[in-house]
Length: 315
Image (cartoon, rainbow, N blue to C red; front, side, top):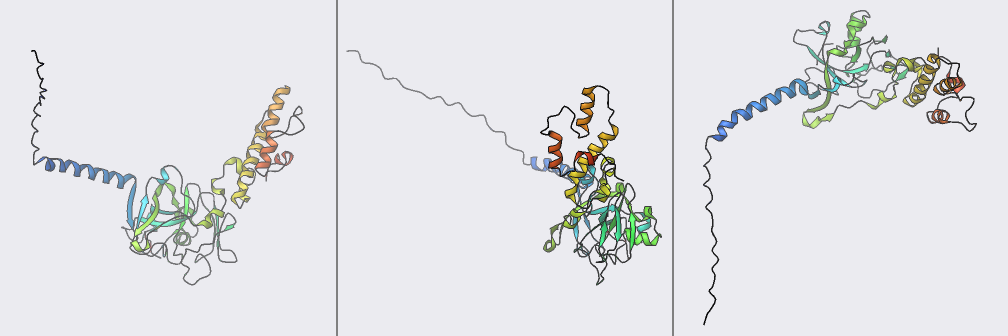
């Protein structure tokens, strides 16, 4: 009698290719490449991005003390100009130096181009564009005034008025203003001389902190950065940030009013009226977009908007 034959399953295993033994010297061959790449990256970062500096004197006490280390952002002012209250590292003018090796200084920005800076008011405070700043961070050495001498200056275009936080022992703008008998070029620094912004104190660790802008500078209006439009409606007389939307609205409407060229056609006249914020004759009595915008910005009625406003230098 016929019987089925049993089948066998045979698994064929292909031999794995033999691994090539790693060379024991491969790490040492790659090490110089890795070290070279790390050095190149470090040089690029130090040159163009962030660099460390140490403070050799007490001109910024006690925000920065002697031998403190700070990190400086060298890219910060590639995209904007310095702001009031920021701590800067800059190449010092030759006339500021008491020794040839004192090339890099660190100070705080007090006035930017166009600022009117005065010392002092009845409470011994510095005023910027008519607004007094409360500088709790400065070292007064027991004196009432925020500066050792009175002054009344306007910062020239492209320049900065900088001062040390140790006001009575700092070779800063005020010291050079007094030493040069009021020469504003010699007593200010060029914006292009700024290396970067000191943004963090990292050594010693016990005092590590961010070097942020003191809140008192937020009270100062932006007269030094006013556009020609906003200056035409009295930006120099504004004292608080909450006035800026109204001033901007006034500036744009006033400018449009002065530069508009009405055409004899009704359509053209209507466009000019809308541009300067007036309601054209054919507009609905319920109002329009511009009255609501003026209300949102806290502005005045349209008819009133059309008037033209009349020690030792150290880092």
